[in-house]
Amino acid sequence: MTVQAPRLVVTTSLGAQAAVVDRARSVATACGGQFRPRRGGLPAWWKGGDFDLLYVVSAEGEQLRDAQEGLSVHEGLLKLKCASGRGHPLLRAIAPLKAEPVPLVLDATLGMAQDALHITAMLPTEVLGFEASRILASLTQAGLRKVMAQRPRWSAAAAKVRVEVRSSRAALAEMPDDSVPVVFMDPMFDSPLRAPPGYGLLRRCAEPDPLDSAWLRDAVRVAERRVVLKLPWGSKLPAIEVPSPGFNRRICGKVIDYVVIEKELPEPIWEAPRQPRNYPYRGAR
Image 1: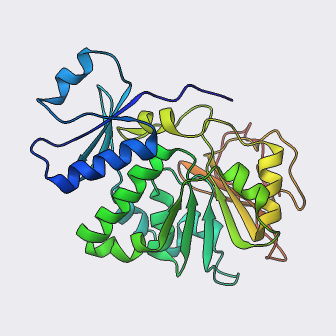
Image 2 (image 1 turned 180 degrees about the horizontal axis):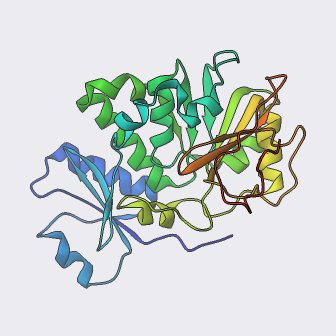
């Protein structure tokens, strides 16, 4: 699927120092946007209608904006997620308690690194994140630096997340077999879940293509132990060809499920949550 890239303007906070201006110029170059010096309040900027998104660089952090909302990287609900401990569905999917520890996770759809931060905060694991959008990658790199500098509780977790501006489709196709322990995939849902403010901006910038057989096949080939796919709660499995051994583990949360192509565990467990009668996987493996 090909979509037109949003027209991007990069600016700074009012009265920005030279280092902030230099950073804004470098963001504009890296992201294919136009740098404009900051003059006046932001609401007036939207009246011209000659750009779609505004990337604002300040000494306090970086934010992507449209006329209605803003998006930036922060710890968000990380404290609440970590309160569930190792029993959280994401962590059980990535690193089952009965399996060997996982030293590295390849996050094939990094986005704003919320799942990556959760993984590195709770597991002795590093995350290599591929993000195809130069805008989101720049925002995420800046946000992780901010977390490291300003959020002592999560600084170690942020330091274990590495961002590469790459399409995971192309990257996985080039990677050797069994070259990373775990591949985590969170492609865009067809029907977005209820999400916090700013998520619409992420969808506008993120790679829009849905999961297909070729992408999943390369992920399974590259993953030594397992591939973890994030799905809306109770949803059907993707209607695509799935490589052997197929989806053989499902970990169910309250809003999100994780389906796994498990290679390491000899007897993977398929969970079946409380669901309506027409739930298609009740008691199934």
